[in-house]
Image (spheres, rainbow, N blue to C red):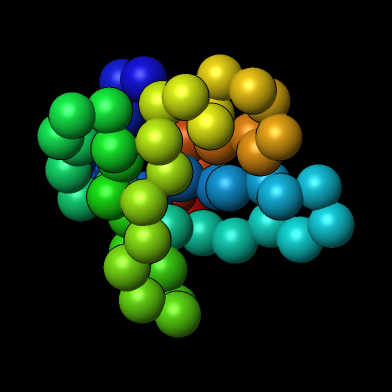
Length: 60
């Protein structure tokens, strides 16, 4: 998956959505930070479609 470093994304888990900042990608792991801290979403997991990651609208 391709994400832009420093960009903010909406991560939709189906029941809840959260905003997260993309930090980096390495070996198929995508590191994000949200209000709860750091977490990874693997490319393999994202391809299953269980969560949706979209660029957040940051134009205010």
